[in-house]
Image 1: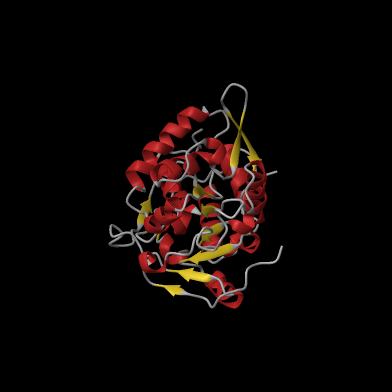
Image 2: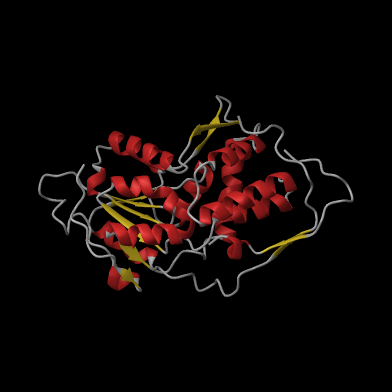
Length: 303
């Protein structure tokens, strides 16, 4: 899976990614700027009469990057793969472009970068990659959960509502995050993009399911239908305008530390806006130097 570079001509690149990135509905309420999740924890569907009166029980869906955690897990994984020699400068700059667009709330079209990323893992054993991602999450991201997230999850759990991770990331980081951050862990209950796996358990390099942008709504609706869940009884927590279609389709959309476009849209729609803070361990935004980047991309571009 390694990429051949141009020997002796790779530049040293210093990047500060955080500087570049970081059915009728219910009667809208005035947008709420919650500064502490404990005091601003939202009403559950049981609080609003959705549970115990013969109706379907609600579910709380949680986006991962910049929502459950205060950073972008895919960006940290990219650093990991660069150091492992799997990713070259060609794909690095493509990814950097899409990370910046996503942070600004312009994620439409990111599936093309996703297709190229999937190609990098063609021929890799899925179980092997899952174990590697699991170790990576425990080492690099276990300490990055937003402090306001856990109290909200606990409130939903206490109300008998399921907490489901709902991310555009691949199934491997999504499953790792679900285990690490107390969401449901059955693979069937982890909503994410999916890399195709062949009969031998090897990644094919193709995408089986897309949860980018509007695709997140479609895969979530598929899951909800299979689980007899009414989205109008559900909460969805996210930071990104890229997820706005799913926000429009649930009964209780909540913008968490939102990007500028989502913040403006949430205020216009009367949605709750929460500030869940940043992890205490994020004392300083790191800068990364990659002097070993090569100039190869994936073997073939996205189809």
